[in-house]
View 1 (cartoon, rainbow, N blue to C red):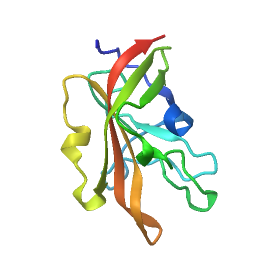
View 2 (cartoon, rainbow, N blue to C red; view 1 turned 90 degrees about the vertical axis):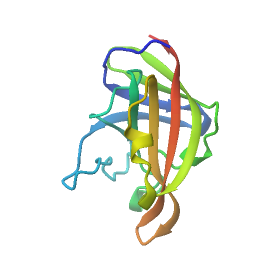
View 3 (spheres, one colour; view 1 turned 90 degrees about the horizontal axis):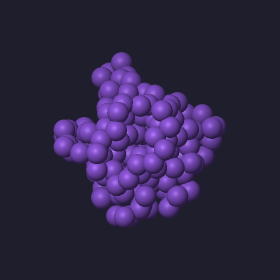
View 4 (cartoon, rainbow, N blue to C red; view 1 turned 135 degrees about the vertical axis):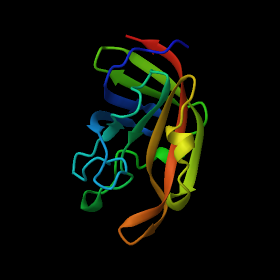
Length: 156
């Protein structure tokens, strides 16, 4: 599958779990970690702007919440239910629509986050979706759910 030119993602769709969300841009927080979307009633996903855009060679990283505090369920509330073979579609600013196929879903302890597997170089266009998961502790979660997906088609 040929890689696409850089174009910012504006929408993310995951039919298997009913996700259809606008995508905002995220950078780095003051502590050097990747920002997460703000906790609001109208939760949406966020693309880490220092990663490749969806369809470019490398791992494009999109994050969203599993819960949004007093507002209830987050946009990625059912991310852990995805299975190998499920489809994910990104809509890009330039009109391209790369489609990805889930290759793996992993739940990992936040203390053992696989930084290289998520952000490290790969030789093809891939997508990483990240949210919190596992048991709750206080107001947070102990784990992360990470979906790995590879580009399988592109339309416009």
